[in-house]
Image 1: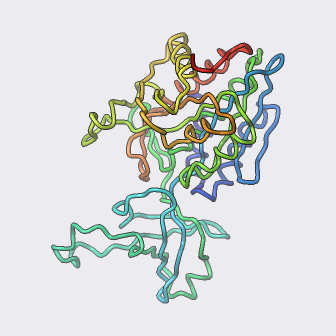
Image 2 (image 1 turned 180 degrees about the vertical axis):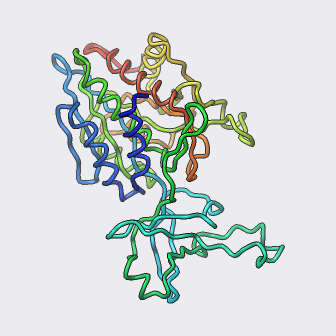
Image 3 (image 1 turned 45 degrees about the vertical axis):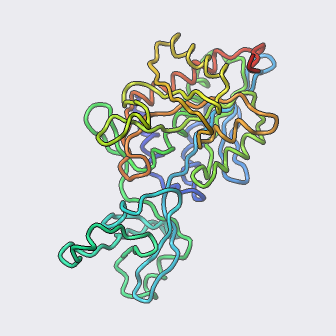
Length: 357
């Protein structure tokens, strides 16, 4: 991965963007794509997109969508002693929080806090295995009382895990928020690579960094309705199963470094799937196949059903430890996914028909 692309990935991963609070990430996205596209737009929901006009009539219209929101928390209550109670934004395991450092993203900047937890010495043996539910967990920012805490923190402030992107051994990296800021990253990288090519594709390309996916696929719903694409590709993360205690019989077998995951099933247009596979073979990109027997629960679900229907595909980057502050992926897979989508765009032709035969 070129250094500029890695720095973009790092900036996107580290900027806070819990669902409903994505605009700092969208600013990073817009600034990265602005010199490589014909138009940059942001809609009333907060979706950010770049447009590259195609040759000739510019048909078909293809929409790439990756959501930039991450799971996080929101301040709900401050007690008289200055301890802050919160609720999750998106699906997070209660067991992850005790003892963690977090940032509360206040109006005047981030405030460090810790999720308090009694030391093991003070916990009765019978209670040590119990999971403390979210509404009983609290954040300590060091305030003496409610009055002091309220000087810095307001109800509704967003909260994220502390920590940013770090390199592991080889091409592996760790960060919070890879789900699904790497989707926005791939969309932006695809726009950059297409925009830098001398020859434009036949198709018109919209690359969208969508919002509020973790709360019900909201950004992709409005984006697809507005753009009215002929073809839509959701760029997501998928569950890697190459670490202990993951049941492959249930999840499937997906490895880091083995290439992007291409979904196949009811949510996926079979001709889009076949073209993705053809592109992968032509460009010698290894891929992994996901059997998806029902709606995928990703942006692909709502893109497919927009207006009169959209020929939809789903491409995912294998990810370990999803919805934790320590998500792990392979940069090799990210690079391969970018290449696959650019290749797919250049395979699209004006006379293509995606109605299943």
